[in-house]
Image 1 (cartoon, rainbow, N blue to C red):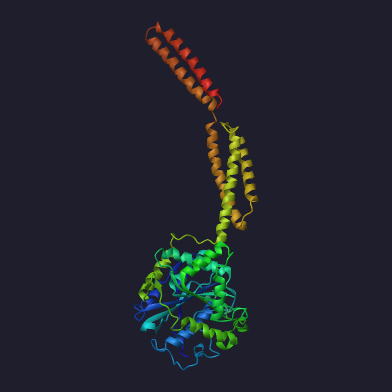
Image 2 (image 1 turned 90 degrees about the vertical axis):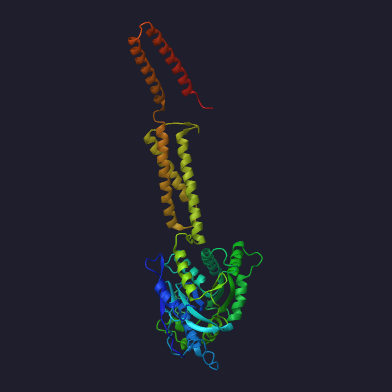
Length: 490
Ligand SMILES: Nc1nc2c(ncn2[C@@H]2O[C@H](COP(=O)(O)OP(=O)(O)OP(=O)(O)O)[C@@H](O)[C@H]2O)c(=O)[nH]1
Ligand SMILES: [Mg+2]
């Protein structure tokens, strides 16, 4: 068994836990290397929930690739060798991508194996094989956006995506896959063809029902058929999800692996093949060549174009930039979206209630605006606000305390903004009674003094006539103003 050569290289990392950065130099060193830059590339990636044995499995992928393809460029090792020889000696520790016992997340970002395995596939085409290890989905510390970024990148960059799931293919596995695939498709945009992605392999770990569907590829096909089948009576959203997944990948398959045995419960277990249960060894021995054997390898294509090392480098940088850009929508889960929508609806209902309560106070019988003294207005505001917040609290909704606190704060801010407007409306009514007569009286007085001056400067004869005219005009003015002001609307 040849020794595994190379090291895992982190190519996508986060320093602040929010945005990912691509290590372009590292990627360049691998993909733009002399023996890779012009080769068509096969990209195998393993993605899925955290702590489910992804990196461990990749260790065996590496053993196979090393055994099968690295002896010299492309000539596979002795065909007469036993088919399980690639698995190594019984006590040989498992090397490769870093894997770990325990409950806490381990792999962060995306890692690539530094060695590209060169081999020849059908039509004598020389290709380079690249392995990617990815950060597990839904760990307790990463945001949903981070999980979506990693899974989508893994889907977009690979020609064969191994979707590692535990125990079964559950509805949430299918929904998450559809969501991340769609998220990735947003970047690819239109025109990538009917199936934007190539191979998808569900790898079911710890399959517990071998009497229902046998371990391996055959049982996997049976389970996959069942899970992706569109049965009569299936809820519409489940039907849509299945249609999307089928249309996104050109080849979907599944493999059922048994439980590896209790060695994995021992923190000191070093991953050697001898520690694994017999039937796990047997099926791992089938799974790995089934995914990585020469007949299974598929060159990475985007929009029908086969990618070489240099193209893959370009796409990787582009996708990382796009996924990190603000143009991408924030990927909220259905749950988050529902919680947000429900809280927003409750907020807007409570705000409407506040406005209508205040309007009742500011408008007599709904038409005529009345003036409230500042302390009356303040007390009306406090009471209406309390009632509105009470009504917000009573609405049943998803999202729990965190959402309630957030949206209640927004509601209070919105109510205060409304109150500022109400104060403005009210203040306009502060002196309505005297403002118009005061203006009017000012005009009359102005005329009165003017006529006095004119009378003194001009002839005394016209003065009483002018004065009389002004008094009459004033009386007429006061009558018409009173009629206008006291006339009730309607
Ligand atoms: N139950 C179970 N455990 C496994 C299997 N394969 C490996 N493990 C164990 O699972 C643990 C985690 O393995 P890793 O390969 O580090 O898991 P991972 O999915 O890469 O974890 P993250 O990097 O945190 O996402 C180790 O203790 C492995 O021995 C399997 O098929 N079933
Ligand atoms: Mg890992």
